[in-house]
Image (cartoon, each protein chain N blue to C red):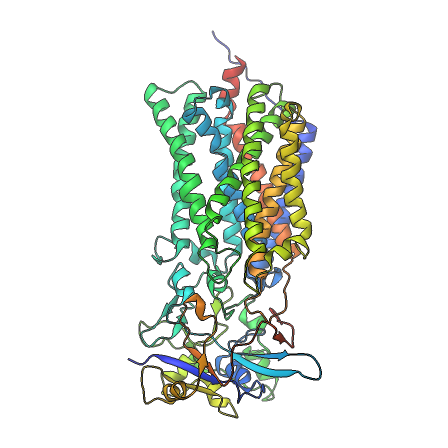
Length: 388
Length: 244
């Protein structure tokens, strides 16, 4: 008679502390949400002069990671890099939880959440890009869910040849869709606004796409490195991590080049009311701009060296790149609305309130918790399979 | 069908802001919301300083960017040219605020009852024994002609965007907007831009005019006469208040 012995894995002490800390942040976020939802956006730092702020920046940041992490699926199925395969399911989970986080950021920004759920199904304006953007969310979520199903089947060794073929085309489709329709619709929301000279720039959609690739690749690098730190075995070997580091450096180089182009365009702008470059270089946004420039620079320099593409330097580079992307998203949103509509108006500086910061941290903590729980659950069979 | 618009004679404006007060009283707008706002500007250095006043309402553009970007069609343009908001449909995304180059949109960031200048609740009014006027304009809650949308007045719900309606509730009664009605020097003129016999058409024919940010092709229907557009050297005397 066969006996099945299941080994119960108890979470480590440090893991319990970490999850408890995340849980506290979620509770803080819930309290901030309660204040804002029931008493109004008065509790935020947003005003009628600066109507978009931290929530929109958070939405863009997480949407970028969601789109960018599809690179793993593209590497496995599009470029035949089988060494990336252990990260495939995790990359899809990252995409899903980050997509959910970006939707949460949008929801808490809105004045009426119940009404917003009717878009685009009941209420839609064909000339509004927001309608297509909300539709693109649903399509991407469906693509990811289908992709996740087949990825788990493959990881557990249950996939047929047909399943593998479907998984291949779903992965390639999700990556192409994410980096064009999803991110494109998001960037166009800003790029078409003629009232805000800072955003009204045809370079914005491609720039968005590259920044998404930076954040997605950096996040997957972090997960690849962390798997070696927190479990008995690494998901990917040093050569694969090094390859991911080189990819990250390549994407950072492109986005750095586009940042310089942006800055030159703003500096040479004839608009008297512009001054975005001044905001970056000397104004109230200087600290955030410094994070962006230093983050990209440090990450790029570290990744240039073969030693930098190994742990722990690889993790340092990934964290720097993610910080730089967060700074870019924040600057893009807030400088756009802070620039005066009339030349005679005085400059207004947006600063997020404690409720905005708390709610944003709460959403980020919830995202990490969700990732942790989902990967533990969805990759269980995969782990057993590889151990045996 | 009329195409409503406004002509503002800047050289007549005293900067008294009676138009702002009239708008607030007529439309019951919450604190910090100025559907009509008068910029007080100065230019030059002492002793050669010139002061000008520039009233700014919604421009009710012929090509309104806010209508284009609104995801729910809560912001719409009526056949008579008024750009209005359906308060029962707005989701408060504030895309209109971002897309509007004139800064005329206001979000109800608190419950209206928490955000009026006076406490209008029934108990409070009763306890004031007549000292607080129990004013509530019934026209603001009426659904208006066209497709029966709730489009007039301010402070209906938390989380929705509001802006100048050219006092649609008064227009439907054949009256002019409260700001134009209240101006002591008759600097604000309202009428049909398509009617060559209207006062505003004649004014525009007689005097040189400009519109704000014409280069953006929004085709605003508020015209200014009696001065040139504020130069890049003009400065606002007071700080902009996004929230009061």
